[in-house]
Amino acid sequence: EIAFDRVRIVPSQSVREPAAAVECGDDDEGRVRWRGWEIAWRPDAAGRPHREAYTTWVTPGVSTLRAAEAGDRIVPLGARGRRKVRRLLMEARVPVRERGSYPVLVRDDEVVWVPGICRSRHDLPEPGEGALRLEARAPAER
Image (cartoon, rainbow, N blue to C red; front, side, top):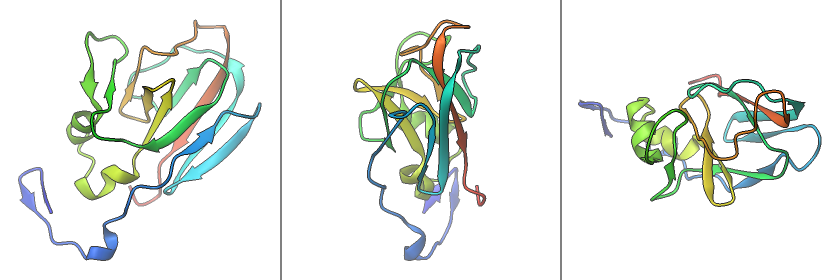
């Protein structure tokens, strides 16, 4: 594996295939585990979102949690234009072997949130409005 100007030799067992997509937010409150990540949601008044947070708010409804796919782009909160999710993962120094295990929250075919890396302007409730609060916990080995 070549990443960040370094060559690293890793056993083939550590290279994982992307996990299947799962739905979240279909209940008032719940949690789901995906590739070691834990995503929990509950109803809450929307707070002020931060671009690189592990907590965010979305309008109530079902979202899909999956790995990033080729061509995925996000409209970053507080920025212009669209950014490639793959590029954001690279800039956040997520190792190549872990990028298929990094969650991406999608709604209406739009990438809404990459936990700890980027929040989109899409599906953003006004502060104080009824919303779903999402909290992500990364696997212990990260």
